[in-house]
Length: 151
Image (cartoon, rainbow, N blue to C red; front, side):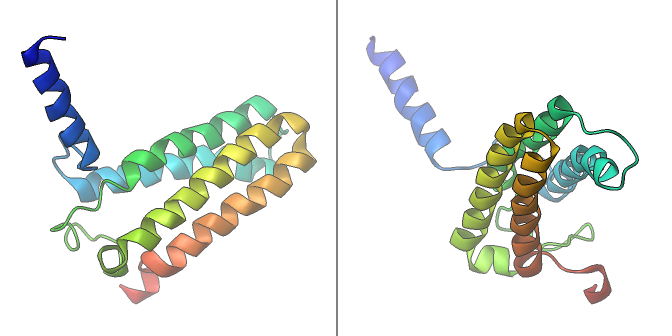
């Protein structure tokens, strides 16, 4: 490895190690868009639970995988300075207790991975695992998201 390529590796490692979301122009808008996408991913699953469409293991696994993959980016979309504006639903507790916020995201990441794996076991298997996804979502929203009636 040449001296210049070794230096580039060090610089890139330092940048990536900071957890800073590079090229995030509007973190509030981006996190809202990400959560909207997660909501869309869940719509098909909700339709199954309502009896509006048949269970499809591939669709269920795909929805859980999409949410799972979004979480690494999601936690980076709360930099200092994005606490207010654009009608954000983020509570100040996100910045006051970043470690717990990231822990809740990790819980959801684990729950969605388990639900994606459980999808191939049939609806009953998925239903149990999806319950844990719902619990993880609720735990984070209760502590870190402003309810509409609180706005």
